Image (cartoon, rainbow, N blue to C red; front, side, top):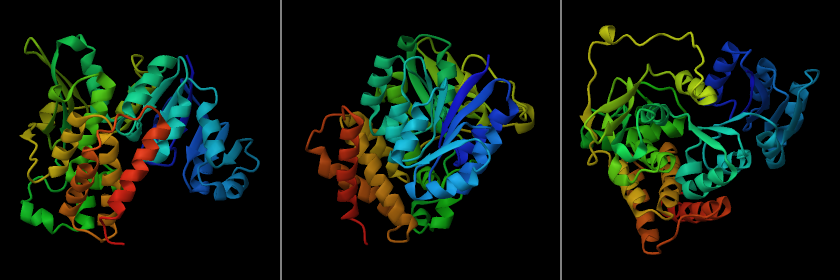
Length: 386
């Protein structure tokens, strides 16, 4: 059965991998709409390549360029918030939500609809507004399928039993570029060194989050909302080979694991069709040739951002929203050469401390989440050099 698909974030790394999955399965997947950020030419190329019916650019100023690039294709287009919302709401069986940052909150919320599957790759929907987002998805009867390799692996592994029989769920981390570095050496790290992820090809901000291990902390918060597990049943394990993506330990001592080669097309294909697997012409996992899989405890002394994220998860309420906002400002300051590597965690900790005494409840709506997000960002901006 052919399923229709809308891709929010079609020009990013997840969007590009999704395009490869679609092109390999034109009989099973048809693209309704694609959404991009500012690059009209790149979005037009994706829309034409995938045969989309509609293309929307978030940057309203790029509307004329997008329309011109699509001239003669028969593909409708628009630009600005209203066009992005239209794309998210168009009739489709699956919406791949991969717009990064808080910019993806509103379009992802707009995509929620009864019976629709959301293939979720926008962390902020769960980190910033997890309770509100998941409650709305349940109310509407929308299915949420994780695209992150770790959460997708866990979703598959959790099918082996009942959630009440889960003792612990573990997501893995490569350890980033500084896995073997001393704290003293990490403190002197350059932006280029922090951006050099050893396995995955991702955006620059996510690369820095992987270097600080904040990315794994945010993924713990995501797992809490996706699977309904408390902080005491969520853990991180460093696994440099990136073959084991998630593990589920059951109360009887058994462990179910999700393994795959590190290729985002694997979890994307699973999220798009879920239990109906798509045959993918990808290299197969050959454990004999790999020979050895290694695992280490995550070091929260050298990587304090992970500890901060755990603390935010335990605190609950609006603290994950505050954590994420402060981290985005601090990472941008580091990437701009205005602060050092460990100043990222220092600024995040300071902002979280400022908000901790207020006992803010979890945002009940996307609007509330965005308001708290902006307040936390402003607090972080005051802590970093202009």
